[in-house]
Each structure stands twice: as structure tokens, then as C-alpha cells.
Length: 443
Image (cartoon, rainbow, N blue to C red; front, side, top):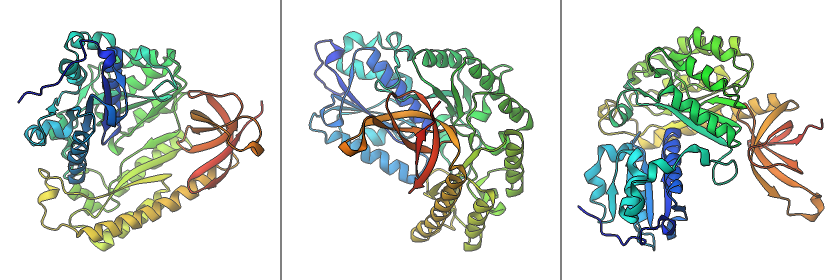
């Protein structure tokens, strides 16, 4: 099937592109790279309703994610500018024909590294071949269209085969980004004014390139002198004593780790094919806190997994409280066709899944309040992400900044001179509805 589209006379500066991202942080990184390549070739990023092309980067981790992806494509096709809709990402790799059936303006390009080139082939063939050579992270400037925090993808793929997850089938086996490319990207980001990089991937603990493992990646990135280094997510079994020794020696490591749990009951963990027990998980987190000292530990939990009894659901809630997480990311179980869990006959009724998710979100709210309360009165380095002028005349001169502390708290504070990308020393004073208010420390 071909898509007929008028070109812009060969000039990509006339091309407006909107990029919609669904799903995980890795998708966000990959969408950012697509945007950079298009900008490097001269295209513009515009609002969805005026775009010549809309890129939809899909997720397929659950049945709900599949539905959201198809809805996003249908919405893109309704844009008044009648754009070409280029679909990429995990679901595009598994359901190419399903997307093509949605409309004659849909183009499927499962290889994300080819998306920008495909957009230009459709709309500006003259520049399509120049896309990749034009785009590098050297063009990033904090506060100029990109966040002051940059996510850096270090690997792709997974071979864990959790029973609820389709990702290994969509993304394949673990594959590393070469270490020299990771270091180069961080160095360019540092030189462009980015203060924090987040190392991310589908399963970063599976990083393997020659003799290099995740520990070597962390040490190499730390040596670039980037102000702050953060890990996006790491599996409990990858938190070895050897890795923790490396983490403990990094002066720029943020005191925050996201360690997925998924369930606080051993039988449910076994059904999920998670390959650890609650005792083993608790021992790893205790080791983390012993080696790294006070830090925020956040996690993922799934509510209403097939066969989960009410008592098992309650054990998960109690285990989360016992662990003292700083935050829970609660996911209501959603069947994903093609996974073992989806074929389980013991599916939990949707209303019960919702009720169990609500119970866990109540635990999350309480845990977050406790963690924030433990931080009030202390001083933190806030990475400025947004600055807005005060609107009320009675508030005095200056602006209000919003930023993120090293342990991932969102904080608002008054500033006189600050811009996105700056690190500001802030005393944390009060909290309301999950938001922390502070004031800059006078030095």
C-alpha cells in the first residue's frame, strides 16, 4: 500500500511534525531521538492539529496499551491538516497489518531508527538521505525544546519472560548500546548544559558488551563529570554486592533507585515468573540501604493478577508498607494476548482489579506522605525544569521555579535568577497533596 502525499518542494523547513509517545521511558528516549533527527534535517515540531506528519510511538505491554495505541492513531487521522501518520514502536512490530487497516494515510515503520528518514521520504525526498548525519545530541540546549534532564538509552530487549509481558517478543533479546556511544552522548549533553542524565533501557541489568557490564557503564558515565547521574529502573536480582560497591563510590549518583516488585506474595511472584521471593527482595533492598545510606526506593506493583486471592492482594499491600517505599507505581492488571497470564482461566473480574488497585494507591499516598515528611527541614539540590513569572503584584519581584530533587521529589520555590538546567540548593519547608514547597538556601 502506498501513501500519496504532496511534498514541500524539497524543503524540510516547511514540514511540521508532531510526535506522540505512549508507554515507557525507553519509548520517550527513542521519540526524542526521532525528534532530534527531524530537527537536524530542518523540520519543525508543531501541534498535532497542524502537523504534516504525526509519529505515534506505540506500546504493547498490556491490552489497554494496545487499545490506547490504536486510539492515538485514529485521533491522528482526524487532524484537520490530514497528516501522514507514521506508526512505530512495540505494537507496530507485532501488528503491522492491523495499523495499515486503520486508514490509507497510515504508514508503519517498526524500526524506530528509520522513522525520521521515512517521514522525510514521504514529505521531503530531497533531504531524506541527509537525516542521520544532521542529527546529534550536540544540538540539545537545556530549556530550548528539551528537558534539562536527559534520558540516555544504554540497551534494548529483555529475556526475562515474565508471564504477563509481551516485551521480549516485541523488542527481542538484550542488546547493548556500545559504551563509547553512551559516553559520547553524555559528554555532548554535559557540554550542552544538561545537568542530569538518566540511564535507561528495557532491562539495564542485562547490559553486556564484551567485558563491560552495567558497573563499567556507570563508572564511565560518572567520569564525564555530569552533575547528576540517575538509573531509571533495575531488577532486584541485578542489585549485586559488586554493583552496589560501584554505586556507593559514585559521587554524582542520585540517591534514588526504582526496583520493580510487582507482587508481595511468593505464590503470585512465582506465577508471574519473577524468579525471586519476597524475602530475597527485602534482603536486596536492605543491602542497598546499608551500602548507599538513606535514599528513596520506588517500585512497581500489579493489582489483580490472574489467580490472586484477596489474602494475597492484602499481603502485597502489607509488604509495600513494610518496605517503606517512597512511592508506588500501581498498575491494574490488563490481559495482553500472547502472554501466558492472558490464557490463565483464573482472571480477576475488572471491578475487583480496580478495587485492589485503589487499595494500593491508598497505600502509595500514605507512603508518599511519610517519605516527604521525613525530608522536610532538610536541604536538597533541585534541578530547575520550569520557571514562571509571579502573577500577583503582592508576591514581590522574581519568579517561581519548579524542579526535582536528587531523590525525585517535585519542589516549587521562589527564585530571582534561574533557568531550566540550573541546580539550586533548596530547603524543603512544607508539603501539600504531594507537592513540596521550599526556599533557596542563602549562601
